[in-house]
Length: 495
Image (cartoon, rainbow, N blue to C red):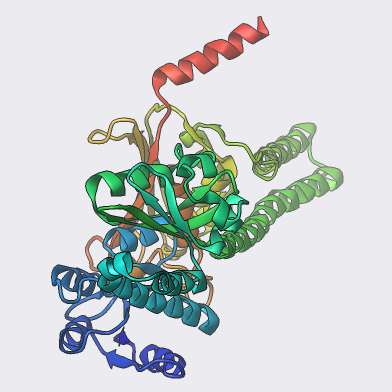
């Protein structure tokens, strides 16, 4: 097999792991790896994304463009997590996508699975005609090979009748492999025809090209990664349960949610403590003062204003911590104002001037707590970048070039982010604040925004005269008619 990674420590580590079982050739960049693959085609290519001269995607395109090495399975290694990053790799033609950090066991399992599959596919291709004419013993050997792979395998003809299935299919269909032969695929797997997997399988059959998909399969409440390989006789489908991998990603998200809640609680405690101390001092002055009643009333009026501010913060805090698990319609300007209220003291002590440019836009349908965390992370980062003062500009408007999308821009005049860090900014565990950051904040921002059909972009400069960072978030807006209908319906219910 062939390993490509420009990081010497990572390359040597992975090579030592794989050398226990495989003959490994290592390359320091994509060009060196491509030359090695041409000279001696490997059973599998394991490549990092970020490399000099030719990166991992460039190597993938070059391999797929040459017929002699186009079928070699490729596993991409990257620190970028999330559906968009994984989809980008799979859509580019990769066979698998492994997120750093990974365990040695997971790496060996993935590599072993794909090498076995590659060898099997080569053998299936070479023996396709031979297996049709040879005796039953040769066919049994072929089926034994399919029985040993980890994926569930099913073959269908052009009419979607199942012609063969390995034993692993029983775990998905709740029917023994021998009992599904001759049956319609869509009948054996209820709900499959209407799912994304059904659409992808029909596309593979109709267009005659390999298709891949990783998605949630509702009837089993599990996540699967599927590959569909068309042939003149029908379709071969390999499906692997990847639910455990998804669960690990969910745990990572949950841990960062809890950490963000702790940070927010500390900020709120600071915001409340300052006015409460002021109130205590004012009450003390009013109690001991021998001044005229007008001065005492002035003390008490100031104390009342401070208590009103405490109540205002408390209301916003309760709205966040009583978050429903169901999505709802969210007023973006109002939500951003809540976040700014929580960070009022930090903004003031840092000498940051806030400018608001809020247009009237339809609501966003999402989880309030998730969007609260998105804006909380971005505004907190902006304040950290302007410790010696600066300007924070937040705007909300409808997108001109993308109808139905709302645009939120959070722009600061802070120190900026070095250009070499920008490509990795949304990777998990990558941070520009090694002494304070967890490296998960911006990854979580991207995960939440993408989960509601949005995107987030960043641009930054560290060079005078205009250093600073700009985050642009695109979120789908509810149509005006939807918002009006919902408002009218609510009013009618109260009459």
